[in-house]
Length: 325
Image (cartoon, rainbow, N blue to C red):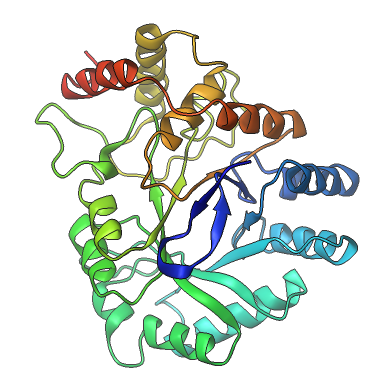
């Protein structure tokens, strides 16, 4: 497994990271034996980063990972998240501290390598979405996370770069964060663009990656398989859509269009999708979800094969410019 720099942190992270979320869901839905085998297999393949969150299975993902980590010698890097609920009477500071403490307990760790904001950052707050002010003001989320860092409870700070683009970029530009989880895949690479083509009608993340690069932040690609649409035609019911202007029908249709253009020369669909993401050298790691251990083997074999060809990337960019027509 190749390693890449993790932004300005000085860490080296595996190109593939183990995702503990609902999409794939092996830490949530599988039995104890299978979960343990998956984690050990990932470590054997060179995966050194595991990403989870309290919301994944209502804590089950963190608990499962924490139990397994106590049983093995290897100590990979672990990231988790904090979601702010403005409907609660509890202060932001208290919510951040309580969430981190509960994550540490479930993960059975003394410290979390990376704690990330899990709430979308928008222009107007609405319960579980937050604004730039909630993050950056005195006594806000960033201050609360910095306190945890100073106490040695976390090592680094990050955010999930979803929500309103300009608001998210403003938080990134503050320079207070070390990493961002960025929506980026073969049918939606918009976060790598400065400006989206006029024909683009799907979720538009333009400017996100450039802002991260300017701040030397690590970029953790998420939804690499577009909630599995890029990996398989088989639907499980766990294909949740995260982004606005994104629909199941268009995800499926755009997937078929992409593969009709580039074919199967780069491996399986999942391998091709992963290789596309890793073709972008600004990406520090690609977080993948899996439901079967063989999916992990398949992905890691794809990563070993390297980037897509320059000619293929040109054909893809032409397709994006035309809005998949």
